[in-house]
Image (cartoon, rainbow, N blue to C red):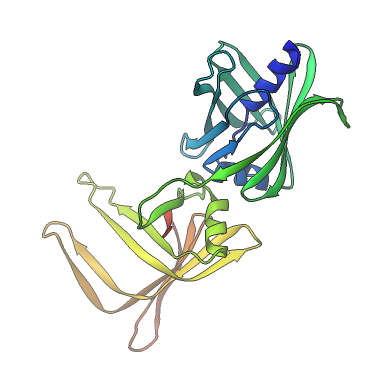
Length: 302
């Protein structure tokens, strides 16, 4: 592999992450990649010993996703951080873009496009039109190709590998797989990971918090297990919780009292707006039925 080929290949290996922005839906391909946590390629045939790891984290209240890429230094043979990057939606041209910074003091920027569950990074490197292609295999594996792209086909392919997700080591108990704000914007994890957990039969628990707007900022945090789950149009997840007896917190006395004639139920949604209903359990009379927008964390038992 010549110097140009090697550098283009290395640039490609250092670039992969995805993000979301307020008001901008995340394409399926980006959602899957961002939800994988750590993606690993063993590097067979790359000419570099060892493996490449990509770690993702959502930032700026769900508006961007940071990526850190680790691989083996070809000169020293040591494994370590090679680059950091960010992906963002650019309002000016209504398209996705990326910028990547590496330890050599270089930065690369380009455009990101998605087609179904496939993902493409296009950029110019030393006057060459380069493309990194991520071809969907399943929710835990992507075929990865780096090469020269002429707009319709490959002129030359420098590298091909397969990236697979690695599940994080966790202790027994509940773990957050996805969280969002009151507008449905991701703040932690990914919707794709939650959806996969639901489809595989994992138990799901919800966590949400109310904070008063007064000077004391009193708060209550609630936890409830989902009793009935729905995946709508293979995208958003909705969960009903068992109806509960209404309750009123007394922050001064640090106590809670039950409401004798009130039963409360909720249908939570990853869109950020949840359907709530209160009724009299004795008479069945409906007291209220209204939407409630609030942040929500979705937990699963590993």
